[in-house]
Image (tube, rainbow, N blue to C red):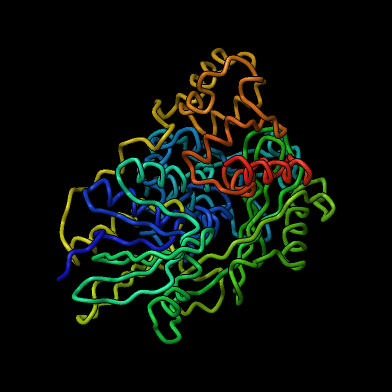
Length: 499
């Protein structure tokens, strides 16, 4: 066998690819990760923003998946308490759907099959008296409240990439794997820098295809496999409207088709409503919400809320494609959300493992499962370690965000409270790195609007791989919801000139 540049070559900079890179490099493997766009630019930034067990998956008897996901909630919260926080979910009892006893049984299981320690347990609500019932239609008198967690999904990806890079992984964005062949027991890969148009040769002992919706495309175009068909593409869409209520709890609504839809507080001033489930056939890069999906979400939300949700209320929508393993389920909503790791198992070529499915909640466990395959295929290095060390910015106690926020407000008293809150939620203790040396707003440089300054953009470019205005506005900050088109254009032009 020839010597290789890297032990592992990872294709895809979503949550699975970055989680695997972090775990692997921390165990002593050398890692090269290639992402053809920005980090989290695919499925990983278009989720419902939840770290959750998947309450509805109990109906499909996915007990292992639910148990693993429930156990992960508090582990992930402890790893990144700035971008992950507990959230209570209100489930109104709809008399024409699942009976109350079945909901109680499901929530009892939800409370007890995972390792819940800090998250509060389920309780029954009188919606005529509880604040959460005020915005609901009067027909809903009884409900249940349970715990899960909210996450800034795109930032979770970036923090895993940051930590992987700090430990020695090579993370290359806007870099595409254009071809792969094997020679003398080693993969010989050609990568292209899509911005510079330059190509380079990389060799690796093992390839991990974590390309998400493009996993089959990678197999066909880069590895020459004829008509691979392993992945089932399922589209999920969300709408964002001005905030519907003033409290901090979310809602989970049942529908007669068996689906559930969330209404979740989002970015202080908004409510995000979703998601849909429908099979998708097309280019995942061009996925968009359909009129049917928009109508579906508006109608379902309106059947629960007193104030109807109308299309004209929508300030933003987003859609993503989930790369589920094609298990032959007849309906998209019934397809398994569990992850599948599929090795090539060919004796005439080096190891190649393809990843299908998975959830943001279980990315760390997926990475640990991948490490077992890596040990089997090449060699063992290190031991499981990712459940304890904090992700960048999360180096404070799990329940200590309010303390950190108070400290930052004191240290940067010249900055408005809303901006400090946003920075603390994004960067945690690393807010001090973003604002390093600043004594006033003037020290932060160009003001792009809504609390976004040059200092933050330069930090993101130096530490978080941002290259365009969209990287900043939609995947790192979500300030795309607030900046005007003119302001966004100014930011993008400044970045192309200055960075």
